[in-house]
Image 1: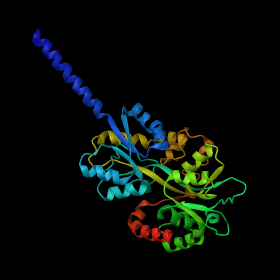
Image 2: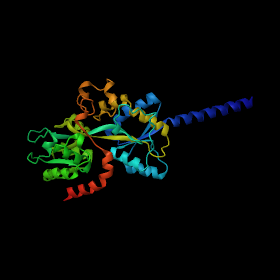
Image 3: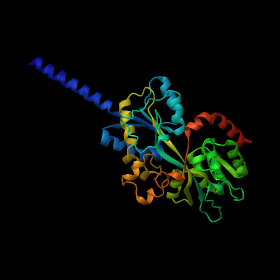
Image 4: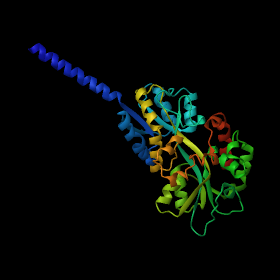
Length: 342
């Protein structure tokens, strides 16, 4: 009898350990940018990953590629899926910091070929748009051509980076969104020079850009659409346009040596699903990458009509090219920094 009881106990312990192993195997850690975006991702990505894949998603935040590099170099990365800026995803792949994605698990149907690579895939788009105060005494440019016209007076602000800023200067001077790359840097700097005296601030973070407009330090500026939309929803006297928007994107990667690679692929599969992509944009104005999202019925028709990645609009906007910038950023960063300092 004692031998039977011992065997029952042993079996119970073994089953318990197996259950713990299965539970641990179905946990995955996601590191993102935090804030309103990650709040929206929790509902659009993580809750649906739990529902459809049985995944428990633990969350963390990070501040970019350097954090991923530090974890990988330590040999003990704690993150399984990381959301990075587009140029960082390309750079991480080139530097061997990420794992190849399993496209037998991740369905990339509906994702344009320029929006994924061997080790990364774009997860949500975001737009740099023109925004302005609606106060009556302020100038209200409606196009980038207006913005870069020195005859339209008023304090303005631009992003403190060559990428995005140079593209906007070229769009303002009539370069077709589809013909931006390779960038004509000389041309772009000439356009920037026209309004340099009227650029009172070169902002470096989304919160900074929003505060500039809220406080009326500037009358108009380049800004991420999510920040402009947040201001407008809060009742601030601002407006913005998606016309001539420049689209960039965040993308997801799996750090080299991630502890839960199989579960990471499942989470990315959910992130890229039409359902999750459509749900996200109803929570924060970061448009879908997967064009199938527009077929789900989740996105209201009036919203879809305004979104830059919608089939009716996608040919009217410019997409940022992180691959081109990987080869040219060091040179143009130095030139740009000298330009704004002198």
